[in-house]
Image (tube, rainbow, N blue to C red; front, side, top):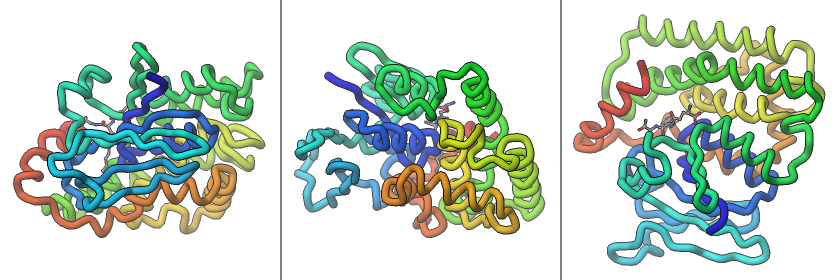
Length: 289
Ligand code: GTX
């Protein structure tokens, strides 16, 4: 068995891994892990097939009765397989890959790996990818490392909270968020965006220099969380706005849109079914502390 990536594109680190693998033509089998357990019709009973660089979702009409967790599809010339694990992120099968039951996760033969940053670095080392993603140059690489270390406790937290406080709690879960909490969350996001601009982007084309790197990919996939919630994160921030355009162009607009298709619909997610909500609440509360 070759490389398998366990992802849910609702998750920001999964989007970074997905874009990186596809952009660099890394052959992988996609195992879709449905984090919110089939609560969204767009995920339920769907199978995905990768055709070249596009993931094609197959609707329920293509699924068999009692359909199998995943069905491999082959599509020449780039044969990537695809799979679906609807509502399986807490399953025993997934726990074999990641005992922490979080995505992204990677399986390469008998080797399993968790943590998005570790996965991205593994992919840069195992496959021949352009140097700019994670430069060999000591100091250029250190800049990427610096960003990757910074973002986990800062931008990750702010963007995740903005999405949940603005949309996922009040609209999807029907749990009101006080105006004070929302205001505090958005203020925190604002401070973090300023840091991103002042400390990292400065007047450069990309966060760590003249070329796109893992830092930009990890950052943009985070920022698309509040964007999906309807936050105008680029408004009044011309430098960040042009940086976003550069990153999108470097990644390729089709791939960028494909990876963000689901999160960009976050505002329109239908309210969760009460039983789904009951199952999700402990997970959500543990995630949004
Ligand atoms: N530090 C890890 C990384 O970067 O890989 C974090 C992994 C992580 O927390 N993954 C989350 C998960 O699998 C998904 S990312 C947040 C998802 C937001 C969904 C928005 C609608 N969580 C599952 C769990 O905790 O059970």
